[in-house]
View 1 (cartoon, rainbow, N blue to C red):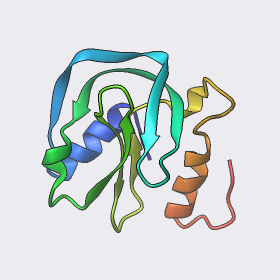
View 2: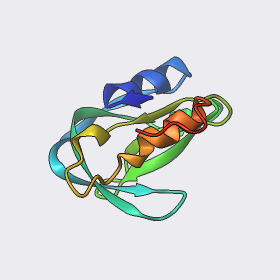
View 3: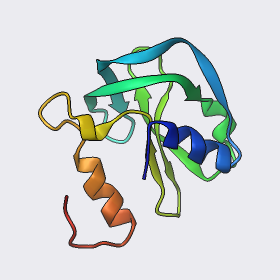
Length: 117
């Protein structure tokens, strides 16, 4: 599981590309949209670069989350390997544990069937 810079590292390792944001995401109230469920979560972010979504074609990575403000990539997941990366800090939990469930999701991906954080 990649957190913050981990999303950029995973994307680059798989052949994707990154770019410098015009305005970095630096606050405890950045909304991210889950593309699978349509649900919006409030996250804590502190980054100035993002993954270029167009560069992910052919990488076996799917975009999982987008920033609701500027539509930049905030989370990616490998299509067949246990790899998940988030551009924000789920451990910071600025709201009522908004995205801590993603740690459990990663444990499932890694084959830890009954594990919970």
